[in-house]
Image 1: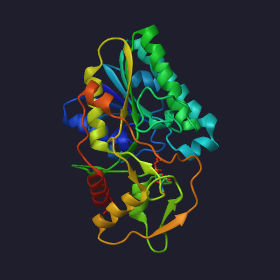
Image 2: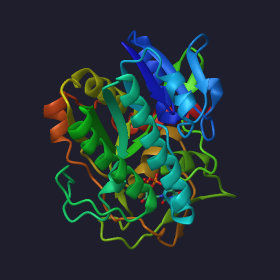
Image 3: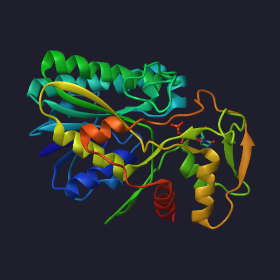
Length: 317
Ligand code: UDP
Protein backbone atom coordinates (compact mmCIF):
# COMPACT_ATOMS: atom_id res chain seq x y z
CA UNK A 1 0.00 0.00 0.00
CA UNK A 2 1.29 3.48 -0.84
CA UNK A 3 0.90 5.85 2.11
CA UNK A 4 1.50 9.58 2.55
CA UNK A 5 3.03 10.37 5.93
CA UNK A 6 2.66 14.05 6.77
CA UNK A 7 5.10 15.31 9.38
CA UNK A 8 7.37 12.37 8.59
CA UNK A 9 10.57 14.06 9.77
CA UNK A 10 9.39 14.77 13.31
CA UNK A 11 10.01 12.51 16.32
CA UNK A 12 6.87 10.40 15.98
CA UNK A 13 6.50 10.74 12.20
CA UNK A 14 10.08 9.64 11.50
CA UNK A 15 9.57 6.62 13.74
CA UNK A 16 6.43 5.78 11.75
CA UNK A 17 8.34 6.12 8.46
CA UNK A 18 11.01 3.70 9.67
CA UNK A 19 8.63 1.07 11.06
CA UNK A 20 6.19 1.22 8.16
CA UNK A 21 9.01 1.10 5.61
CA UNK A 22 10.35 -2.03 7.28
CA UNK A 23 6.85 -3.53 7.06
CA UNK A 24 6.86 -3.02 3.28
CA UNK A 25 4.70 0.09 2.87
CA UNK A 26 5.60 2.40 0.00
CA UNK A 27 5.92 5.85 1.56
CA UNK A 28 5.88 9.50 0.55
CA UNK A 29 6.78 12.09 3.20
CA UNK A 30 5.38 15.62 3.20
CA UNK A 31 7.06 17.86 5.77
CA UNK A 32 8.14 21.49 5.80
CA UNK A 33 10.91 20.64 8.31
CA UNK A 34 9.91 23.61 10.45
CA UNK A 35 10.37 21.47 13.55
CA UNK A 36 11.43 18.13 12.05
CA UNK A 37 14.80 17.02 10.73
CA UNK A 38 15.45 16.13 7.07
CA UNK A 39 18.36 13.90 8.15
CA UNK A 40 15.85 11.31 9.40
CA UNK A 41 14.61 10.60 5.85
CA UNK A 42 15.85 7.25 4.55
CA UNK A 43 17.88 7.43 1.35
CA UNK A 44 15.79 7.00 -1.77
CA UNK A 45 12.44 7.62 -0.10
CA UNK A 46 10.02 10.00 -1.78
CA UNK A 47 10.26 13.23 0.25
CA UNK A 48 8.47 16.47 -0.54
CA UNK A 49 9.75 19.34 1.53
CA UNK A 50 6.58 21.37 1.42
CA UNK A 51 3.67 22.65 3.40
CA UNK A 52 0.18 21.40 4.16
CA UNK A 53 -0.88 24.99 3.62
CA UNK A 54 0.19 24.80 -0.02
CA UNK A 55 -2.41 22.83 -2.05
CA UNK A 56 0.11 22.24 -4.85
CA UNK A 57 2.56 20.54 -2.45
CA UNK A 58 -0.25 18.46 -0.99
CA UNK A 59 -1.55 17.42 -4.42
CA UNK A 60 1.95 16.37 -5.46
CA UNK A 61 2.40 14.39 -2.23
CA UNK A 62 -0.91 12.54 -2.76
CA UNK A 63 0.04 11.15 -6.18
CA UNK A 64 -0.65 7.42 -6.27
CA UNK A 65 -1.43 7.28 -2.56
CA UNK A 66 -4.11 5.05 -1.02
CA UNK A 67 -4.06 6.35 2.55
CA UNK A 68 -2.67 9.17 4.69
CA UNK A 69 -1.11 9.01 8.15
CA UNK A 70 -1.32 12.60 9.34
CA UNK A 71 1.21 13.72 11.95
CA UNK A 72 2.07 17.19 10.66
CA UNK A 73 1.18 20.05 12.93
CA UNK A 74 2.33 22.30 15.71
CA UNK A 75 2.43 20.55 19.05
CA UNK A 76 3.64 22.74 21.91
CA UNK A 77 0.98 23.56 24.46
CA UNK A 78 2.78 26.63 25.84
CA UNK A 79 3.45 28.06 22.38
CA UNK A 80 -0.19 27.52 21.43
CA UNK A 81 -1.28 29.73 24.33
CA UNK A 82 0.98 32.51 23.03
CA UNK A 83 0.12 32.01 19.34
CA UNK A 84 -3.41 30.58 19.08
CA UNK A 85 -3.95 31.93 15.55
CA UNK A 86 -0.79 30.27 14.28
CA UNK A 87 -1.90 26.94 15.77
CA UNK A 88 -5.35 27.26 14.22
CA UNK A 89 -3.88 28.17 10.85
CA UNK A 90 -1.28 25.41 10.63
CA UNK A 91 -3.24 22.61 12.29
CA UNK A 92 -6.87 23.26 11.33
CA UNK A 93 -6.49 25.15 8.02
CA UNK A 94 -3.65 22.81 7.00
CA UNK A 95 -5.79 19.74 7.64
CA UNK A 96 -8.70 21.35 5.77
CA UNK A 97 -6.47 21.69 2.69
CA UNK A 98 -5.25 18.11 3.10
CA UNK A 99 -8.82 16.75 3.32
CA UNK A 100 -9.98 18.79 0.32
CA UNK A 101 -7.06 17.57 -1.77
CA UNK A 102 -7.69 13.97 -0.64
CA UNK A 103 -11.33 14.34 -1.70
CA UNK A 104 -10.34 15.74 -5.08
CA UNK A 105 -8.14 12.75 -5.93
CA UNK A 106 -10.30 10.13 -4.20
CA UNK A 107 -8.04 9.19 -1.27
CA UNK A 108 -10.51 7.83 1.28
CA UNK A 109 -8.41 6.71 4.25
CA UNK A 110 -6.72 8.67 7.01
CA UNK A 111 -5.19 8.00 10.43
CA UNK A 112 -4.80 11.19 12.45
CA UNK A 113 -2.61 11.97 15.46
CA UNK A 114 -5.00 13.52 17.93
CA UNK A 115 -4.26 14.13 21.58
CA UNK A 116 -5.40 13.61 25.15
CA UNK A 117 -5.31 17.42 25.28
CA UNK A 118 -8.77 17.27 23.65
CA UNK A 119 -10.21 16.15 27.00
CA UNK A 120 -8.83 18.98 29.13
CA UNK A 121 -9.14 18.59 32.90
CA UNK A 122 -10.54 15.07 33.35
CA UNK A 123 -13.57 14.41 35.52
CA UNK A 124 -12.86 10.68 35.65
CA UNK A 125 -9.68 8.61 35.67
CA UNK A 126 -8.92 6.55 33.63
CA UNK A 127 -10.13 8.61 30.69
CA UNK A 128 -12.40 6.91 28.18
CA UNK A 129 -13.05 8.10 24.63
CA UNK A 130 -16.60 8.90 25.70
CA UNK A 131 -15.35 11.46 28.26
CA UNK A 132 -16.35 15.10 27.78
CA UNK A 133 -14.00 17.13 25.58
CA UNK A 134 -13.09 20.53 27.01
CA UNK A 135 -9.55 21.44 25.94
CA UNK A 136 -7.78 23.89 28.23
CA UNK A 137 -5.37 25.25 25.59
CA UNK A 138 -5.45 26.16 21.87
CA UNK A 139 -3.33 23.13 20.93
CA UNK A 140 -5.98 20.75 22.33
CA UNK A 141 -8.72 22.84 20.71
CA UNK A 142 -7.12 22.45 17.27
CA UNK A 143 -6.87 18.67 17.69
CA UNK A 144 -10.52 18.52 18.72
CA UNK A 145 -11.56 20.70 15.78
CA UNK A 146 -9.81 18.27 13.44
CA UNK A 147 -11.49 15.28 15.10
CA UNK A 148 -14.83 16.98 14.45
CA UNK A 149 -13.80 17.69 10.87
CA UNK A 150 -13.01 14.00 10.34
CA UNK A 151 -16.43 12.98 11.68
CA UNK A 152 -18.07 15.35 9.21
CA UNK A 153 -15.88 14.15 6.33
CA UNK A 154 -16.77 10.54 7.00
CA UNK A 155 -20.49 11.36 6.98
CA UNK A 156 -20.50 13.72 4.01
CA UNK A 157 -17.62 12.58 1.80
CA UNK A 158 -17.31 8.91 2.70
CA UNK A 159 -13.96 9.13 4.46
CA UNK A 160 -12.69 6.21 6.55
CA UNK A 161 -10.90 7.96 9.43
CA UNK A 162 -9.35 7.08 12.76
CA UNK A 163 -8.19 9.59 15.36
CA UNK A 164 -5.61 8.32 17.81
CA UNK A 165 -5.50 10.37 21.00
CA UNK A 166 -1.97 10.18 22.36
CA UNK A 167 -1.18 10.46 26.03
CA UNK A 168 2.58 10.95 26.80
CA UNK A 169 4.77 9.53 24.04
CA UNK A 170 8.33 8.57 25.01
CA UNK A 171 11.21 6.25 24.07
CA UNK A 172 13.21 6.00 20.86
CA UNK A 173 13.85 3.66 17.94
CA UNK A 174 17.23 2.46 16.74
CA UNK A 175 17.64 2.02 12.99
CA UNK A 176 20.42 1.76 10.41
CA UNK A 177 20.83 5.55 10.52
CA UNK A 178 21.23 5.65 14.30
CA UNK A 179 18.59 6.65 16.86
CA UNK A 180 15.30 8.33 16.02
CA UNK A 181 14.55 10.27 19.18
CA UNK A 182 13.09 13.48 20.60
CA UNK A 183 14.97 16.53 19.32
CA UNK A 184 12.76 19.47 20.18
CA UNK A 185 14.00 23.01 20.60
CA UNK A 186 13.03 24.17 23.13
CA UNK A 187 12.53 20.82 24.88
CA UNK A 188 9.57 20.82 27.25
CA UNK A 189 9.01 17.09 27.75
CA UNK A 190 9.84 15.40 31.01
CA UNK A 191 12.02 12.43 30.02
CA UNK A 192 14.46 14.31 27.73
CA UNK A 193 14.71 17.05 30.34
CA UNK A 194 15.41 14.50 33.09
CA UNK A 195 18.25 13.08 31.01
CA UNK A 196 19.74 16.54 30.41
CA UNK A 197 19.62 17.42 34.11
CA UNK A 198 22.91 18.37 35.76
CA UNK A 199 24.02 19.91 39.05
CA UNK A 200 24.26 23.30 37.30
CA UNK A 201 20.94 22.87 35.50
CA UNK A 202 18.77 20.55 37.59
CA UNK A 203 15.43 19.19 36.40
CA UNK A 204 12.67 21.49 37.58
CA UNK A 205 9.87 19.50 39.17
CA UNK A 206 6.74 21.51 38.41
CA UNK A 207 4.73 21.32 41.61
CA UNK A 208 5.08 19.10 44.66
CA UNK A 209 1.68 19.84 46.14
CA UNK A 210 -0.62 18.10 43.66
CA UNK A 211 -3.31 15.79 45.07
CA UNK A 212 -1.31 12.65 44.23
CA UNK A 213 0.53 10.14 46.50
CA UNK A 214 3.95 11.87 46.16
CA UNK A 215 2.63 15.35 45.33
CA UNK A 216 3.84 15.38 41.70
CA UNK A 217 1.76 15.07 38.51
CA UNK A 218 0.91 11.64 37.15
CA UNK A 219 1.01 10.88 33.44
CA UNK A 220 0.49 7.87 31.20
CA UNK A 221 3.62 7.18 29.11
CA UNK A 222 3.51 5.07 25.95
CA UNK A 223 6.54 3.91 23.96
CA UNK A 224 6.73 5.43 20.48
CA UNK A 225 7.20 1.93 18.96
CA UNK A 226 3.97 0.70 20.58
CA UNK A 227 2.29 3.91 19.44
CA UNK A 228 3.23 3.32 15.78
CA UNK A 229 2.11 -0.29 16.06
CA UNK A 230 -1.36 1.11 16.86
CA UNK A 231 -1.19 3.35 13.77
CA UNK A 232 -0.47 0.37 11.55
CA UNK A 233 -3.36 -1.56 13.08
CA UNK A 234 -5.64 1.45 12.66
CA UNK A 235 -4.56 1.89 9.03
CA UNK A 236 -5.16 -1.76 8.21
CA UNK A 237 -8.61 -1.70 9.77
CA UNK A 238 -9.85 1.35 7.81
CA UNK A 239 -12.57 0.21 5.46
CA UNK A 240 -16.02 1.79 5.31
CA UNK A 241 -16.90 5.48 5.68
CA UNK A 242 -16.66 5.95 9.42
CA UNK A 243 -14.77 7.92 12.06
CA UNK A 244 -13.45 6.16 15.15
CA UNK A 245 -11.46 7.55 18.08
CA UNK A 246 -9.03 5.57 20.26
CA UNK A 247 -6.93 6.57 23.26
CA UNK A 248 -3.31 5.48 23.15
CA UNK A 249 -1.45 5.21 26.43
CA UNK A 250 -0.26 2.33 28.55
CA UNK A 251 -3.18 2.45 30.96
CA UNK A 252 -0.73 3.03 33.86
CA UNK A 253 0.28 6.27 35.52
CA UNK A 254 3.73 7.40 36.72
CA UNK A 255 4.45 10.46 38.81
CA UNK A 256 7.23 12.88 37.93
CA UNK A 257 9.23 11.54 40.88
CA UNK A 258 8.72 7.94 39.70
CA UNK A 259 10.05 8.87 36.25
CA UNK A 260 13.05 10.58 37.87
CA UNK A 261 13.67 7.44 39.96
CA UNK A 262 13.51 5.20 36.86
CA UNK A 263 15.96 7.51 35.07
CA UNK A 264 18.30 7.60 38.07
CA UNK A 265 18.40 3.79 38.04
CA UNK A 266 19.10 3.70 34.29
CA UNK A 267 21.80 6.37 34.54
CA UNK A 268 23.42 5.00 37.69
CA UNK A 269 23.33 8.31 39.56
CA UNK A 270 20.69 10.43 41.30
CA UNK A 271 19.24 12.89 38.77
CA UNK A 272 19.55 16.42 40.23
CA UNK A 273 16.14 18.03 40.72
CA UNK A 274 14.81 21.38 41.87
CA UNK A 275 11.37 21.73 43.42
CA UNK A 276 9.64 24.44 41.38
CA UNK A 277 6.20 26.05 41.12
CA UNK A 278 3.39 24.36 39.22
CA UNK A 279 3.37 24.82 35.44
CA UNK A 280 0.27 26.64 34.15
CA UNK A 281 -2.28 24.37 32.52
CA UNK A 282 -1.02 21.05 33.93
CA UNK A 283 -3.80 18.70 35.10
CA UNK A 284 -2.82 16.63 38.19
CA UNK A 285 -3.48 13.19 36.70
CA UNK A 286 -3.91 11.92 33.13
CA UNK A 287 -4.29 8.19 32.61
CA UNK A 288 -5.85 6.57 29.55
CA UNK A 289 -8.45 3.87 29.51
CA UNK A 290 -7.04 1.84 26.62
CA UNK A 291 -9.62 -0.93 26.57
CA UNK A 292 -11.22 0.39 23.37
CA UNK A 293 -7.91 0.26 21.46
CA UNK A 294 -7.16 -3.15 22.94
CA UNK A 295 -10.50 -4.57 21.80
CA UNK A 296 -11.07 -2.53 18.62
CA UNK A 297 -7.55 -2.56 17.21
CA UNK A 298 -6.26 -5.71 18.90
CA UNK A 299 -3.46 -3.51 20.27
CA UNK A 300 -1.46 -4.16 23.41
CA UNK A 301 1.45 -1.90 24.38
CA UNK A 302 4.35 -4.04 25.56
CA UNK A 303 7.12 -1.60 26.55
CA UNK A 304 7.09 -0.13 30.06
CA UNK A 305 8.58 3.02 31.56
CA UNK A 306 11.98 1.32 32.08
CA UNK A 307 12.27 0.58 28.33
CA UNK A 308 11.19 4.13 27.46
CA UNK A 309 13.83 5.61 29.75
CA UNK A 310 16.54 3.11 28.72
CA UNK A 311 15.97 3.73 24.99
CA UNK A 312 16.00 7.50 25.47
CA UNK A 313 19.22 7.23 27.52
CA UNK A 314 20.84 5.15 24.76
CA UNK A 315 19.62 7.57 22.07
CA UNK A 316 21.16 10.56 23.87
CA UNK A 317 24.65 9.01 24.09
N1 UDP B 1 7.51 18.17 34.00
C1 UDP B 1 8.38 18.61 35.00
N2 UDP B 1 9.58 19.17 34.58
C2 UDP B 1 9.91 19.32 33.28
C3 UDP B 1 9.02 18.86 32.28
C4 UDP B 1 7.82 18.29 32.68
O1 UDP B 1 8.10 18.49 36.20
O2 UDP B 1 11.01 19.85 32.99
C5 UDP B 1 6.23 17.56 34.40
C6 UDP B 1 5.02 18.28 33.86
O3 UDP B 1 4.60 19.29 34.75
C7 UDP B 1 4.00 17.15 33.74
C8 UDP B 1 4.86 15.92 33.43
O4 UDP B 1 6.19 16.27 33.83
O5 UDP B 1 3.37 16.93 34.98
C9 UDP B 1 4.87 15.56 31.95
O6 UDP B 1 5.13 16.74 31.21
P1 UDP B 1 5.44 16.73 29.65
O7 UDP B 1 5.74 18.14 29.27
O8 UDP B 1 6.48 15.70 29.35
O9 UDP B 1 4.10 16.22 28.98
P2 UDP B 1 2.58 16.77 29.08
O10 UDP B 1 1.90 15.91 30.11
O11 UDP B 1 2.61 18.21 29.43
O12 UDP B 1 2.05 16.51 27.72
